[in-house]
Image (cartoon, rainbow, N blue to C red; front, side, top):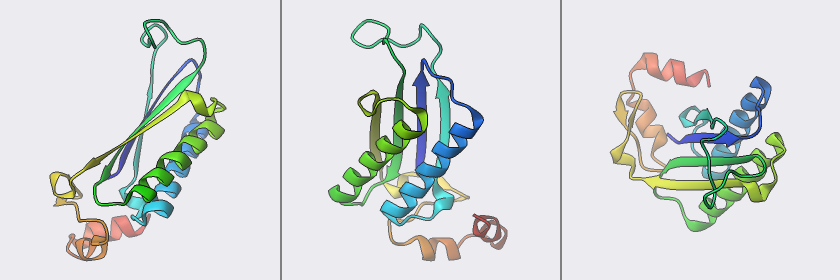
Length: 144
C-alpha cells in the first residue's frame, strides 16, 4: 500500500516512460507522506480506442487518470500536496497537459488492508510493523 493505477488513452507510453512514472510516483509518495518506498505499487492500464467517453463523446486528445489508494490518517495539506505533485509528474513524463491528467486519492483504513502477510500499520507505526514481519520478508523489503 499505496496502490496507484495509471490509466491512459490516445498516447503510447514506452517502457521507459512507465518506469519513470513509477519511480516518480514512488519518490513523491515517500517524500510527501514519509511512508517507506517498498509500500508503493504502480499498475498501468491502457484504455483501448473506443473504450473511453467523456460527456458522451470520445476525447479529442490523450488523457491520463491516476487512482491512488492510500492509508487513511494524513492531514489535508499532505493529501493536497500529494495530488498536485502526482498530477505534475504524470503530465511531465507523458506530455499530457495537466488539465487532462486527473488524480484521485482514496483513503482506506489501515487495518482494512493486508500486505506481506500482515495487516498494515497506522501511519507512523511502520517501524514496529516492519520489525514484526518474518526475517525473510524484512530482508526482501530492505533491498528496496
